Length: 297
Image (tube, rainbow, N blue to C red; front, side):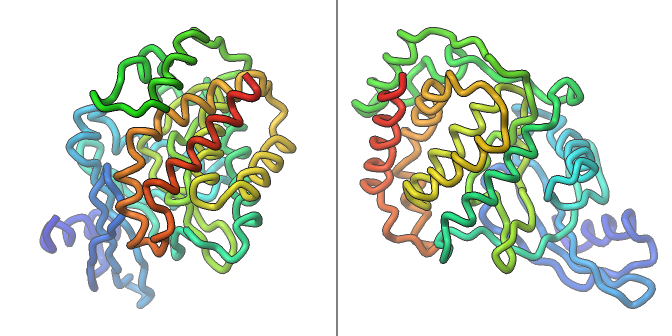
């Protein structure tokens, strides 16, 4: 979006305001994000973010901007830490608050950050899925994971896939709730050691809370380590009175979701200050995660 177009957006939000500056935000794969600062009529300034769903996202869901805007409104009213939504063009973009904060991939106290993360995820999962009819429902293993993602899938992937196929469809023992869909450290913004916002809600859907929980457990294990994952798990379980019978199954689904992406993920971590998170280190962490799940199947 060029400056002239952005000035039109500013007029739609605050007619008497002036665009001061704009800059691109990096890190998002499924959307284009432009931060901008405006001068309000009373002399104050405000920072905002214009989020445009990418072409792949729009092909999958032409209503992505509208759904994310509506969801942010609901989440804010429920007290969840999310950016305030300000303006919507249903077919193209949404404008929301610019949150002062950033992901923390190497915290001084990973256990404390993991526990805070778990508290927020537990609050998200308290939102009843029946109130969000505009969001998609969770897909089954057969729909999402049964087919190999690549011809050269690893031995570990083949092993997980066989176990899940043999297990068959696992009926949910929990009521359907709101799922973030990608609740990992890269989508959590921190400021002064406190969680400032949960961002990137384009994968939100309705389903079993264990699916979200398992994805988060794995990502925290890979990035923050075993102790942090255990703290995350214990805090979440202390706050969420749900049935955990099928957690090993969802752990394996999370592992199969991650397995084809390890090389890509590893290539991005050096620029995030984590050159230690090599493909082999991620693969070792994933193998550990799979083994702990198999011990409980």
